[in-house]
Structures are given as C-alpha cells and as structure tokens.
Length: 188
Image (cartoon, rainbow, N blue to C red; front, side, top):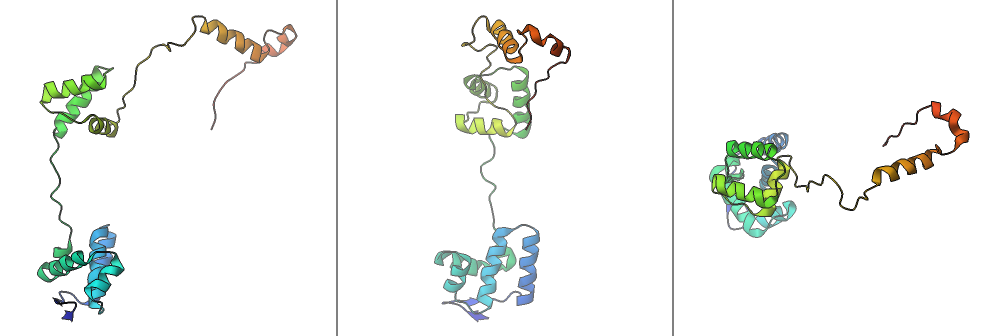
C-alpha cells in the first residue's frame, strides 16, 4: 500500500497490470479511463494525490474522489458512469414517421412543423433544437421560390442577347466558327 495524503491506496493491480489496463483502455478508445488509470499509476510511483492530479490536470477534490473510487472498486470504480441523459421526446419510430411526413408534404414552414409535432405527438421542441435535429436527419429549412422576385420580365431575351454578344455570334464574320459547338461547364 502506498501512502498518499491522509489515505492509503489499495494496490488492486501490479504496475505491469496497470500498464496493460491503460493499453487496453487506449485500444478501446476510453480516454477518460486512460486518464484516471494514469493518475493511479502516478500514485503507485510515489506521487502524492496533489502531484499525481497536477500531472493529469485534475482538481484536488477530483483526486480524492478518484482515489476513493479506486480503493472501493479498482478499475471498475474508475470507469465513468453516465445516466444516459434525458430520454428523447419522440421515439425513433415516431421520429422516422415525422421525417416521412415532412418529406411527403413539402414545403413546410418552421411554424407548421412545430404545429404538426404538437398536434400529432403532443410534444414541443425549442425551435433551435428542432432545426438541429432536422439537420441531423438530413433536412434543411429553405424558402421555396419558383421565381426570383427581382428577375426582370424579359430575362430570357436578355440572357440570349448577352450570350450572343459574349460568343461573338452577332458578328457575321464568325459564321464559319459556328459549326463547332461551345460547351459551358464549371470545374474545380
């Protein structure tokens, strides 16, 4: 047992076993567990809780909690425990149904989507959260505009005239060049 500030550290594993546990946690991409095991390894090597905590970047109160967790349950005591968070307001089946409804009846305004969710599922979402969830599902809000309101009435004639000018097709001396088609494209 190692004496580290007012408490004894229970040596559940040898240093080699701790190294192996760190390696296993790294391979499993458990970064929080790796950090906690490195803290314990520092304690094994003679650091005080404060010194070991400084090396891994944790507060004094956290050093105490991690040391107590190690003493009580070893590696399992150091594993982060998450409650899973708040359950979603809509089940995955309801969310899939909503997405299908939104895709069928396009276009939707944000207010219409909120009203649909509230009427159908009796659930409300904050507008910012709903837009995040819709983006995650591959949807985006957009204003459908079949025609730009700033577009002039004779836009097609203006485009044809400007293309003719740009390509030099108004010029009678270029009649022999007209045989070869011109292709427009955008390249990256």
